[in-house]
Length: 227
Image 1 (cartoon, helix red, strand yellow):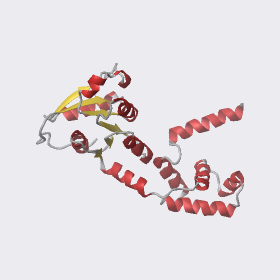
Image 2 (cartoon, helix red, strand yellow):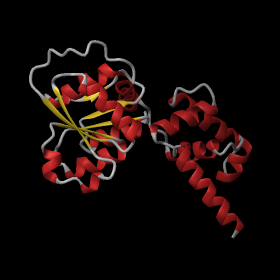
Image 3 (cartoon, helix red, strand yellow):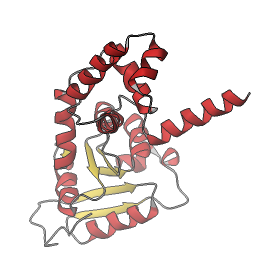
């Protein structure tokens, strides 16, 4: 994350922040940043501890909890409305919206500015939300996107596998011209210039599985094909 500027704070009142991030380097970095401000009292989850082992009393003693994506989702289930801010690398629109729908009060990206982190935690403490500029734009894109039809999603999945229009037509028992029409519609709805960009946008939006999920699907298909 980029620098936060002046560490002097004009913020009134102390904010107790529990850092429950699974990455120890990220956890230490966030703690170091917050401790430079007088209004933050920082509690860091010990390396040997896990989120599932956190007691309700310990979680409720914090004003704001900063966590990674998976830990943050678990805490929104168990913390009973506790103010959870997720800090992660993932800018997937689907993951962002899922986290906020599950009750997270903030979603910040690693690589964003430190000032966004500091201001975001203060905002959540005051009953607001914490989203950086890129996350806000992802939410706007999600709200404005045109939905693909079931047939277009089927075509898109085969595009992800690198199939040509002709092979897609054979797979889906369609005319090649019909597939071309679907591809054109997909590119338009996703505002993509080419098939590769369309697949990347669809993965970011959660329409298609991300690269890790794709690898698992292809690996399992390969194993099944040999059996």
